[in-house]
Image (cartoon, rainbow, N blue to C red; front, top):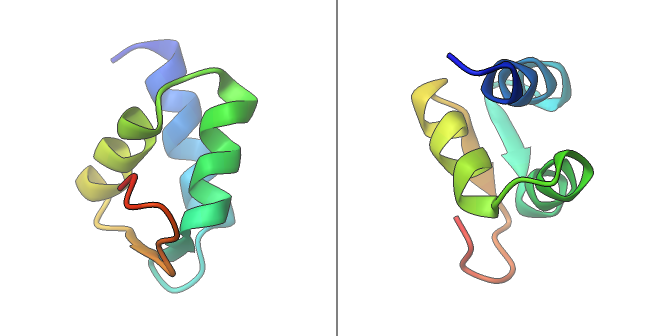
Length: 59
């Protein structure tokens, strides 16, 4: 596991509530870390964190 992936996991776990995170928050995480939206979405799926209120269809 790369350090960046571990960082994504930690942030997702911290910012998600009840196993959910908003699309806006997921995009913000990707932008903060300089990774593709898809990477955050993939990691969220692996952690069983649902992305809600999708605005752009990125996830």
